[in-house]
Image (cartoon, rainbow, N blue to C red):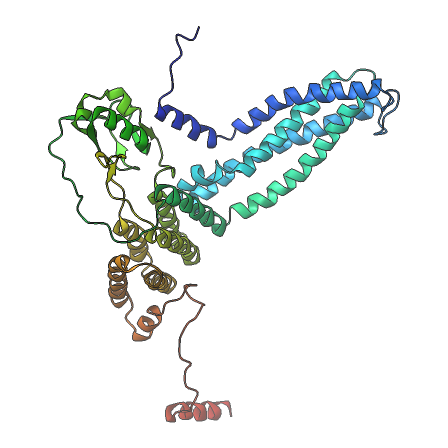
Length: 461
């Protein structure tokens, strides 16, 4: 009977796992399945309590008649059905607001994967199913324990709903959105780059690959490269005694017939289906193996806030705060080279990842160009760059100095007044409002000021 079964490939398992984590209907479905087991247990417990005399079947410790119990259960059912409709309706509105106000990229990475929202919806579905089952099984007598549990669940659902309103209001604030993206970026950076940096990596790889013996191209549906099973590819290359050169970067879009693998040595004999099974594609970038996607989302939020339609530089400053946090973490990590070797030191996989300069350019270039006219932005960027130069090792400083030079030249080009240029060159971790460093204007009267005062006095007279 198991002859037709086949083991799922790595990319299929990855796709299923990602889909489950980002689906709002999975938790409510599990809650309905759990209630199918929970209700018989509660009903059996209630019958046993009546049998041993702990509960009198002729009276109810809730003080409800059959009609009253039915009314209570119908109220609980109506409330939880309304909660479900309101929650999903509000989610649709929240998705539209977040996509328009911030960036559509926060929908899949922040809203749909929020465990609190998923659990609250599961609570409503569980209470709805349990109360409905108690109501349909009620006869001429009140099932006292069943009704009591349904009443407790209904009251708990009301509390959960009120909590959800407060939680959703806090979730959609700009500071909450950028903080969540920043936290996700921290987690993926630590996962992709587990080691701390000790010294600069060599610019050129230690081993040069010759012309490939065979090239494997992408076949099937086009999509965005989400993740790669690096350990699986290393195992395949080791067994074949060859080297696999993985061509695209995580986050790249792959069209049909785009080169996927360049195979060297014994790896040229590997099966194409097994190689493609180590590559997961989708319709939208995710953060599982793509640290630059967290930077991309934060930069998108910043430049949209700096657009003329929104004109919210303070939100852009909040995004720079998180970029500062992520850049500092990346700068302290060992950004591994392209070469992945096995236990024996043999080159088995070439897997290209972004370098330090890529992260700095991604974080600074677009925001500097879009926000050059906002003193908040240029001051906050200067504060970020100078702080990073103090916190990071020397081999990270060259690119930071370049960005500071570009920022200075941009300020000189944008601001015509020397007072504005001086103000724009003051680093400020709050953008505008922190340690200003501006000297107070002298209050000593001048001859011109005295004449203006005398003339104003004569006019008043």
